[in-house]
Image (tube, rainbow, N blue to C red; front, side):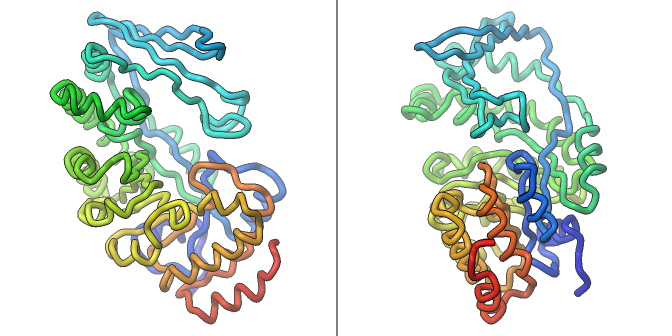
Length: 381
């Protein structure tokens, strides 16, 4: 098979088509620039770039940011003033936020919310007003620019936020101390009313993203079966995925969902979903679903593996060993791609070790080929 470009390789695997090698890439938002990144890209590593297809415009909502100190920690307090009341959220920013990529600090993904905008039942009506007075306007320049910069080196993905119920779970109510679940049990009508309002509001956002120049549209959830338990996933997540996928598929695109948690309990429900790419799938030891089992459960889906960050903490030799094990679990390697990381930075030695292995991962994989790779990459690169 003729050698494919990084872009061709990633897109072909996303569509469950034949590829020459198992696609290997890094997400730009976590990727360090320098000698290791250059070496890894010279060895075939691609780049994936998340960019939005729209801008938000708030109507009749005043947003005020101030600096306050809460429990001895300086935070940014963002207050939303509306005709029906006000809500606020506090955001802690580690050093480096705003000076590097996306919302990263020098060390980690921040900012972190230390106080959510929904605290009491009466806050729901204020947030509903904000949702219903948010306008989504197409702006394809960020995607077009990134596509121009990347060329054949990788893929630009149109990025969507958390789905409506996960927006409440993670962003606006929060699950710390079980708060979201208490709200859902104690005030189900109030929670579900806001959920439906968010879902209605997002229809324009989905349509804009589906019509963008990007070939892949990704819902930026953080699916984990211990948070989005099966009953909640089936009732609130699947219908939203179906709504998104209908628009994305009608535009000839594929849909990905960020599923980086423990997926064993959701395995059968995910199989029923219209999602094309299970993105950020974490195999053992961080996830609870072996790769081979996931491939068997989802024969009509592509899987983008997030290399487990806990292995990186053990050093290059452990990285080498786990990478070879993943290749052994991958069957022929079709409809798979491997991301160096989906959440964190990767140290130079680990990135070079992984690149040395993935450079040789021609398809179809076989036990003989994997053994040969193991012989040729005996020591960390």
